[in-house]
Image (cartoon, rainbow, N blue to C red; front, side, top):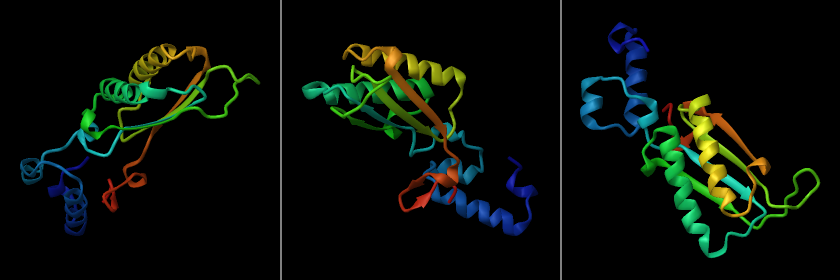
Amino acid sequence: TPSLAAAPAPLRLARRRSAARVARPAAVRASGAQVDPRTLPGDPSLTLFTNVTLGADKMRVMQSCSKLLAEGLGKPESYVAICIVDGQDMIWAGSDEPCALGTVNSLGAINLENNRAVSAALCELLEAHEVPKSRVYITFHDVPRENMGYNGATFAG
């Protein structure tokens, strides 16, 4: 990203306004330092559907998902959102045997290495609930900043 000093005045102002809307430490904003987008709030998230009923273990599974997503993507867990919808009517290959479909959304940090780590950890967690890893699909989305809303705005401003 080019420095603000090199940008024309209207663009510098627009970039400053945009940056001010994103929750960044005041010292970082004041210094003009570049911020790694993986450290910004509002992502990542996991939405997981399964035909398995998790019962009393659901909160523990959600907390485990929160930790594994934060670790797998290298983001603070305080920014992670998890939604698990269990006990759903689902089939895979025409069978209602245990299965799961998941979607991971993130501002950056979506890449082969991280996706493999998250997929492996999530499949291991689901196997403990009788969902074979061969019956789990996870779709990873690297969401552009302008396409993720938070706090009445988007992460692009």
